[in-house]
Image (spheres, rainbow, N blue to C red):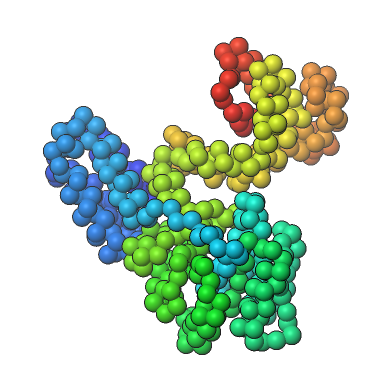
Length: 434
């Protein structure tokens, strides 16, 4: 999402880093490039103006100009000001039982999908969720949420026998209580634009059911329109936070950086993919680290921990120490990596990795197909794979013998590296990606 902005900021910072000592004119030139980068990323012009003013006030101080690492000081100032723009993390208030969350938004923002993702997230956290299908305007919206509820195995109240939205919501919340739900998520209808009938319906629902949280679902690809929509909903019904969808897209990201400053409303969650697990609590510090090319190790670790149990991690560490890592283990890790997300998104979380690094996503698929064409014995003992076996594996996987040889060579090199690491000691390290 922020690739273009990150690249342009990187260029600006590199220019500043070439100078041993910064003059006020150097700072102004650097800030001009940062200003252009933010505007091109579709950040609201008032936010950019205020942001640059605050950075400049701090960046032209004597401590920065006379510092041995002035460019690093400016990067720190930019980071701190970005964090100020985005605000502190704002978790959902779940201090009541059940906690009713009302989802609102325009059609096409991904509201129904966001409802299911949110339910899945709460379920993983041990909070029993329950869905209420109250979008009675859009054809098939009820069917869609019912299917999503089945996919993630959570309770739902859905009916097509009435068009009375308020009655549906009230019965749905009562059904959630009887189901002993901790979180009740109400999916409401949207419109193509903010209109009087939409707002009257939402105001009535909110007045009658008193939700603990009213969350707006906004499309990150809508740009500044998403900020305007958030302002409209906030002014007319009051919202407690925003769920930004399609953050994994090629949207410029300006709305995400602008929303809190323009509306005063925090971002609570971001949708980072199409799968039911692809919803993350918004962490401003991690987002800023990604934008400034500092990586996001904490999120990477969390994604890995979701796929590796403690027992699997200990087992993998033991195999590392004894250099007993097999191709079967390799294939297990490939499957886990694929569940964590795209390789390109994972690489960007590693500090120091080039922003424009070309990641070949198909490489994992090629490797997996080759290993799957091996027998269990061949995966455990790759040394037995000679010419005839290589031909069979290549034919079975639709790959060439050369590709099979390349995989086996990479495996042997990795095994030698693990043996050296085992001698040096891996204690305290979490077995990671092979």
